[in-house]
Length: 389
Image 1: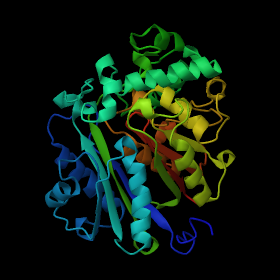
Image 2: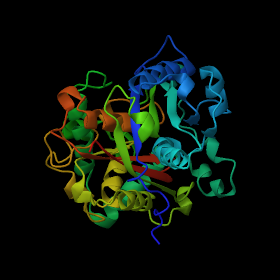
Image 3: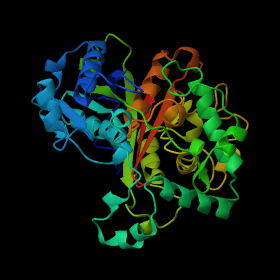
Image 4: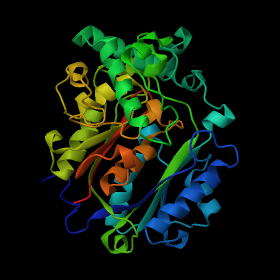
């Protein structure tokens, strides 16, 4: 029996009806909760709903009690709540969880949300202190391995050693992201960028340089997931969720069995199987670009090319505006916004493309988009397939 046979998305389709960014960049005049509340109100308005309609809350990194604190602030007593911590991948995983909950009748209107002021509060740290509580940390913490960029750098080094990947190839990913950001008035960095600029930027953790690494900004967003009946009330075009999957492999890099393979091999396979698609069907991808390396691994692990061929795949502007497989169409975490957890903004970028609302960044007639989130030290992965068909 097919593992997905209990979930009939043809008879009971699931939709995203609202997808709205919070304030972005540096947010001095709001709290995280007020940022989320304002985005929630707009996302629900676009869905033809109000806060009174919400009966499911899915949040991560929003206070010690997560959904409890958000529910109190928004005045919502949910029938279903989830604060699973899968890092930046949590929000793609929440689409999966909300799909299952709505299909099972455990809730009808699911609010997925996140907001952060990491830049304004200077709360981002390079410390490995959070790594000190587990036994396996003894193999990493004494050596000063920074989280997560040191882990990404080890993975990049292994990929280069094993497959001949070059710094120029990684840099081309950052250049593609910046070309999209140049078309996005909300992007943090909009100046033109060259491969030479990336290669001459400061080394952070060899072989990754400053411009191989994501931003630190304030931001967030809200996504509304619901059933077909409620989606009919939407003021904007509902976007259908046709596939989702998630997985995780490790927390400490010493426990990662292969430094070039991520949990995306499982999350992608599950999502593509549920959707009944193959990589060649996809019009665009919103990968989690915590670094240039994470994009390259996503491309390989989701099956857009064979393992080890990602370096060649990303060259010649393939991912950039006008390229054969557009990716990071907002400018991504490398140039647009990265508020500590990017996953919810990837969903919003995909919905914008499928609604035809991306302005100068709009892809011609997209029908099928893939959103791929990661978390931790490439520890977790969650993949969502969306369509406007």
